[in-house]
Amino acid sequence: MITLTPFRISAGSYMRLVLSLYLRRWWWVYAAVVAATAALGTIDSNFIILALMIVFIIFPMLLAYLYFYYGLAAESRYSILSKKAELTDEGLRLIFIDEKGEENGIELLKWSQFSGIQPMKNHLLLPFSGMKFRFVAIPYESLTEESIKAIKRYISNNK
Image (cartoon, rainbow, N blue to C red; front, side, top):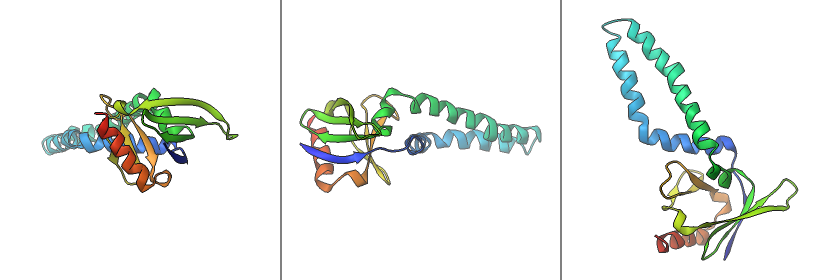
């Protein structure tokens, strides 16, 4: 069993991770819509207004939908709440900690629930199998080389 140092990420950091993963996959749809309306703007100036409405009204509303859909998902608590984590043969054991430093609950996430690992700039993501943009984010400050190798080994052994 390997114990990680206590960690949490802010809700804003969690949503930045979700949005970066989402936009990495779907950026071309947004760009195509804006490019098409801007191109039509050369024919009729009303399309320029439409392009501006899409950029400043519709796209932010879609991103707000993502915030409510993914940011308020039950799985987001695994990243946002303060916790200690233990890497065991059964899975990732999360021990939630309240503001006073007392244990507030324990949850075991089996290794088979994860589809792999995804390194990001400041976090190691453990995406859930079959769930897009839902993951456990572990800051690199809480990890050691030994723990990263153990996570890779556990996940690859349980696929």
